Length: 202
Image (cartoon, rainbow, N blue to C red; front, side, top):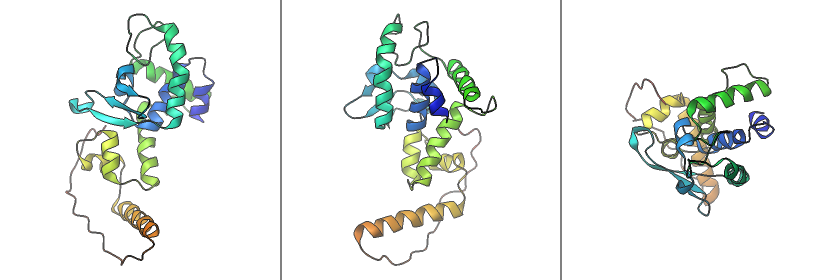
């Protein structure tokens, strides 16, 4: 619903921003700081330079993301002034800023019939992560894609219960067994991760 509203928005940068956040889990600051030189179209990836904690990481693009980027580039060319490497530019040719992204979100929320404030960059990033979890991705992979320094942060970020962990584990084990064509003995899942309290999780 939100993506459809973005595609029909009068502001052409909306669809690129929403798609990138939904498909990559980038933080709003990372989306704004993304440069053309960071993107490898052939590899379907981008290098995030100086993410949170000043850590670089690799993010992966879906075909949908690449299609949106390629559709955006001709529009971007008409806006280029001083920001020659910035991927996302506003209507006056400046690099888009987090506050500008939130204004886009507010406008899209209205178009999608959502209450103002219910659509934020954080919500899109969270949807990316929970979608991976629901499709059976392991926590370590999600941690790397989100750019969390600790897996405990990822667990708190996703509000993962022990029961959810067991379900993800069993689903992954079942898939592995199906692929191998073998029956694996039932194994007890022992949660020996440290008990950690994380405040201000991003």
